[in-house]
Length: 198
Image 1 (cartoon, rainbow, N blue to C red):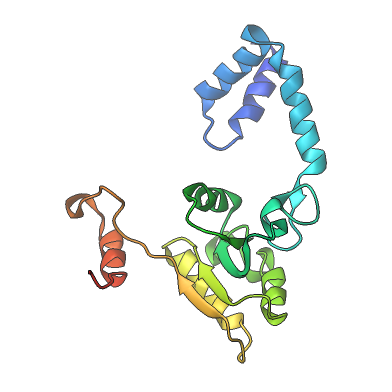
Image 2: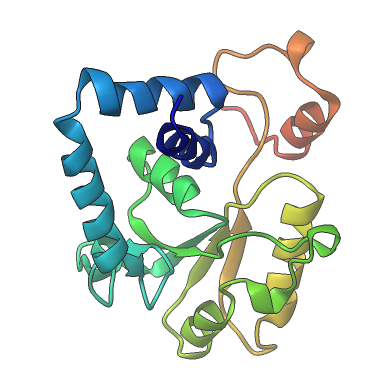
């Protein structure tokens, strides 16, 4: 193949979830099978790079100062769900079960990987808490060591006189899943998160 094709394939392979074969198929599709799509894709990527940025309040994707969720007056602005990444927010929104707003940390604490508190989006969240805007924080972070450490750090940074309720999402068996095939961490979470059955 040509150097330009190989470079395109190499760049596509850098995308999450795209391996060598997928990158090759995408490159061939754009250059050989559907070349009319290539300028549209390039234009869309350039436009997104120019106009999409972080919401100044929550860290979600936005084209204005506030993302559509923070700007929506119908949502409960005092109920904030803290997530690690934007895809987590998207997954929760897709469920249709939540009508509050979010705060995206853009990662979780991980000393091993060099991620310290100043690398995460903590400051705007603390400003919102201090301003008295928040009544409840729902911590929807990973059920792993880094996720737990991030939850602990976040709660330890809250002002002593704060009246913010703090909750953690439940973890356990997926819908339709059985005990037999669950790992020990999932089973422990399921037992710890049990509630009264009525």
